[in-house]
Amino acid sequence: MSELSAFDSRLAGLIAALSPQSRKAMAATIAKRLRKHQQQRIKQQVTPEGQQFTPRRPQPLRAKKGRIKREMFARLRTAKYMKAKGTADDAVVEFTGQVQRMTKVHQYGLRDRPSVRAKEMQYPARPLLGLDDEDMNIISHEIISVLNQAMS
Image 1 (tube, helix red, strand yellow):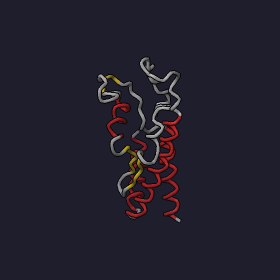
Image 2 (cartoon, helix red, strand yellow):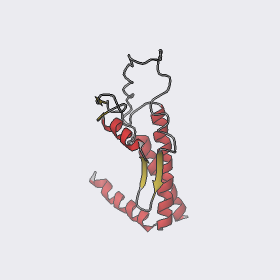
Image 3 (cartoon, helix red, strand yellow):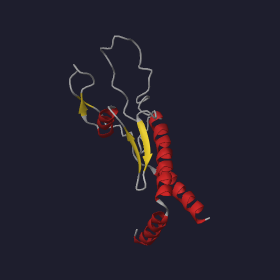
Image 4 (cartoon, one colour):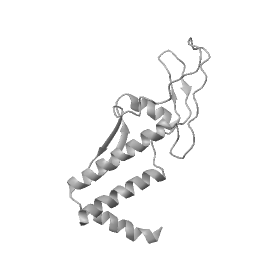
């Protein structure tokens, strides 16, 4: 790890040498590409570690017979709720508005009420956001391409 510290400090220096506008543009591009990858992973119902989401529990008192055909988190992964933004200092992918509370419950496996009159229940942890190896590759490729353009 100590061999890479010189490389990390040099890379941080190169990024700091970029103008704030180009750092912001790079961060925004990274955030958008990360959001796209997170959306694809949520659609596949896979955690950042590569495990499948815990399936929904059965609904024995449901009036409608049959299975639930809609996949979990279908609307949450849309750009309306899943925002990507970049500043000169960071790139952020986050859930916004009222869905933040619900996604936090699923991300960490907390207790919540499924509806107003229902009893509080424990939800299994279904991590929606997180970084995996592919995300790190996306980040490094984007940084390298921006630095190549700046050096040209």
